[in-house]
Image (tube, rainbow, N blue to C red):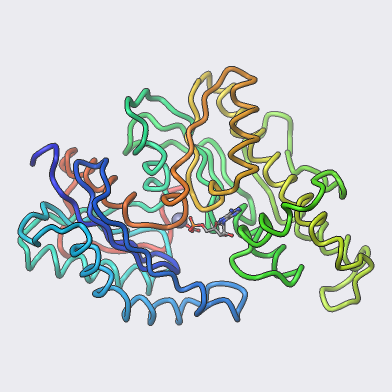
Length: 343
Ligand code: KG4
Ligand code: ZN
C-alpha cells in the first residue's frame, strides 16, 4: 500500500450516517454526515429501531456523495474502513454490510475500526508530529474515558465513567430543562448568557486520585434544584424559567471542570506531558478553553480534535482505518460487529 492511499470510511454506529474519503490517513477529501437528529428529537434521545431504518435509507447516498465530493473514481479507493464496535447493533450492521459489499465488489481490503479509538485518532489527525505516549480523553454521548495511547492503535484504559457519559449528562439535563436534543449544544447555547457560578453543583471528582467519572448525581442535583429535594420531574419548578441560562452555565461548568481536572490529573499521575481530547463533548467551547488553560498552567499540552471531527464522522474512521491497514490489520469479509468495545 502507498503512504498516500485513499481510504473510504463508513460510520453508522449511532445516529449519524457518515462516509468520507481520506488520503494517507491525514487529509480529508470529503466528509458527508447525514444526521438523524430530527428523526430522534421528539423522543429526547436515540431510538435504535429508527436509527437502523434511517441508516438503511442514507448509507448508499452518503457513500455516493462522499466519492463524488472527493472527485475520485472508485478504482482509486485502496481500502474500505468501517466502524464495527461499539454502538447500536442494528446500526453497526448496516454500515458493516455496506462496507463488506463494497470491499468485495472493488476487491480491496476491509478494515474494521473501533469507534472510540477513532475519536482519539481525530485529535491526532491535525497534529503534524506525533509524540507518543498521550493521555487521551474521549467524551461523547456514549463514552467518558481516559486512556494512555502508545500509538494510534494501542489504548490502555486509565478510567471511565461508572454511570452516565458526559454527553449523556448534557442530554438528560437538557431534557429536564425542556431544551432540544442533543443537549450538549443546547445547554452550551442557552448557558452563554448565564453565570457559571450561579448554582453550585458539587463536582463529582470522587476520591482525590480517582480517574473514574460519575455524572448521574449531577442530573439528580439539577432535578432537585428545579423541583426541590426528593421531587419528581413533572413537579412544578421552584426556579423561574428566566434562570435557565444560569442553570445551563452552572451545569456546564460542573461537567467541564470535572473533565478538565481529571484529564490533567491523569497526565500528572502517569507523567505524560500531552493530552488528546476527542468525542462530541470536545466541541464544547468552555471545555476547550478550561482544559487548555488548566493543562498549560500545569505544564501539559492539550490538543483537541477539530470541531467538525469531534461529533461522529467518517473521516476519523477512514483515518484510523489507514493506520490499521498500514499495520496489516485486514478484516475478513465475515467480520462481526459488537455492541460493546474493549473498555
Ligand atoms: O461523539 P458523538 O457524536 O456520539 C457518540 O459517540 O456518542 O457525541 C454526541 C454527544 C451528545 O451527547 C451531545 O450532547 C454531545 O456529544 N455534544 C456536546 C456538544 N456538542 C455535542 N456536549 C457539550 N457541548 C457541545 N457543544
Ligand atoms: Zn462517537
